[in-house]
Amino acid sequence: MDRRIDFGVSLYSFTQPWYERPGYGIADMFAFLRKLGISQYEIVGAQSFDQYPVPRPETVRGLLELNERYGMTPFSYGGGVDMGKITGRDMDDEEIFRESLNDLRVAQRIGAKHLRGTMLPLDYLPRLAEFAERFGIRIGFEIHAPSRPSDAKIQQYLEAFDKLDSPWLGFVPDFGIFIERPSPTLKENLERRGAHRETVEHAIANRHVGKTEEQVWQEVQAMGHAGEGDHIAVSQLFGHQSFGPADFDGFRSVLRRTLYFHGKFYHVDENLVETAIDYDRLLGLVVESGFRGTMMTEYEGHSYNLDDAEEQVARHIAMQESILSKL
Amino acid sequence: MPTKYMILGYGDHVLCDDSLRLVRHGAKHQSLMLDVRLNYYRGLHLSCISEFELRLDGRVVPSGNVILSLHGKEFAIDELSDQYTEFWGVKDRATLECFLGPVAEGGHDVDLTLRFRSPYMKFAPGVYATIDGSARKTMVLRTIEKAGV
Image (cartoon, rainbow over all chains, first blue to last red; front, side, top):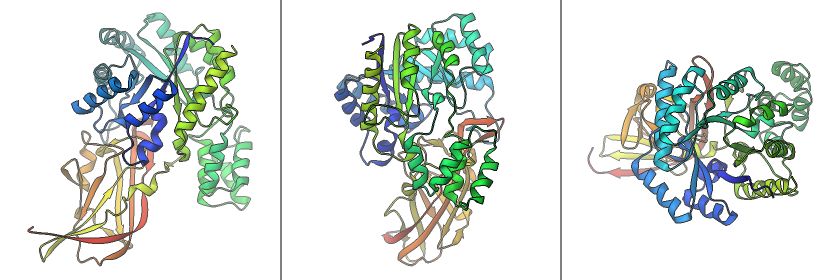
């Protein structure tokens, strides 16, 4: 087992019970994680706090008490600037920078050592690195779908990070950028929402053959499937539930400036395989790069309205252990 | 272009069960109240609400007759777009208070249109993802008598 890589779990993984189960809270998540042998976590402010971007003092106190009681360590704080919260205008870069400093303060208050922050223009990076160092908190910019590591913009940040050569700034690649095929749970969910199986299969088969979403939607209607569920299926498979060839080369290039990973996933089956995302290959590349650090498990099954976070998080950790033990 | 309206799977929780109530303040004054939640994975500032319409038994309740209260503060629907410091947490209930004429006890068709922008999912200047948090259900009205006005 490669012990250069350790595990944490984002509390975001428990979105479904957090939202739906009366009385379910962070204490329940911590109790479960301790049973799994996990002591590091990420917390997403806009989800876990009832006041944001500045949590109430009693919220912070409550979290610190729970850390103590369960022996949990806040690895990272999922901040992020709501640059569109003011109706009628976008925040400018200076405002986003100021809000990023606020996120650093919150990360410090809760005791996190990393902030998953909002990307600022390149000329802000030296100032941001300076503040990160002052607070003792590393700031990671997430590489999230639909971005790919090879995108020109990501590569510009890579170059800037290299030039700055600061340990305080880097990337947080989200494994959701490597979805190569729809998860079986996505297909089931689309059917539950009223899509015909034929619609789902047609949209998948025609996703990467040069057709537009509108063309495929016309074709599906011509097949006699014109319901709302069919429309949602086409729209999602071309939109935020998209998939495609994984950018492994790009991934390799950003590893040297990666602070930690979001181990996003949608379904690990009973054989400990995530069929949508090639974890074998990705973890292989991580180990090959000599990376030392943390894989932050991030289950997103709530997108398909599945209340199985505990089983899935446990399987995800077991899958990673199994893959790493063979490397 | 991304999905026009993203809809998460919590639609059934938006109109909180058993929360439809008619509060009588003496003989003449009454208000219809109802608790609502966001259909999203995270909380939002009230300013992010971009569309709001409440229908009761098919009839629009004029937005000027509706007050939204959250954390002990009250807002007119038209004021919501300015409230970028008022955060509605994802586990929190907001209460809608509607000033209406007589409403019968029993089942009512409650139809809420609630759309909001996701304030960090920016696609272009001024363009953000729209989340559809609308919900409709038949709710049973109960009456609560309150002394005084």
